[in-house]
Length: 164
Image (cartoon, rainbow, N blue to C red; front, top):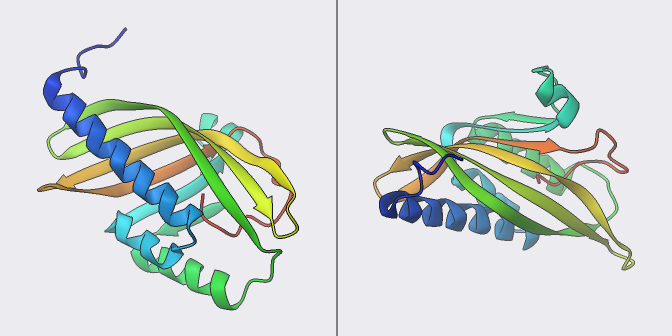
């Protein structure tokens, strides 16, 4: 069991990471998607991949945004060009773990489940999986350098339009 990161100083970092993750998912769940790029460094990367592709180290992603501008473009398209049935997410995050500290770069992982509610009221578990994060600390502020959402299943029953 690795307890080397379970010190008082690292517990503070873990709490900051937990706050970053909570703020991120509340931003998505509250449909404040235009704020999402601000959680990333300028050249931050956001990807959604299947567990199979992740484990085989295959580059194919269901969503791939390289930089804040690409993520902002995706959100703009979601608002103006994409046609999809309205729905909302409710993220559940657990097992947040600080896995490494290297200067101002941190790595963390956590588990997630996303409950989706459609406009007509149908509710289901939409996705589950793990987040693998590279986070950079700039003073008191944390930003994602890379956020990879690894889905447990390769089946998505509808258009994956809203970032997870």
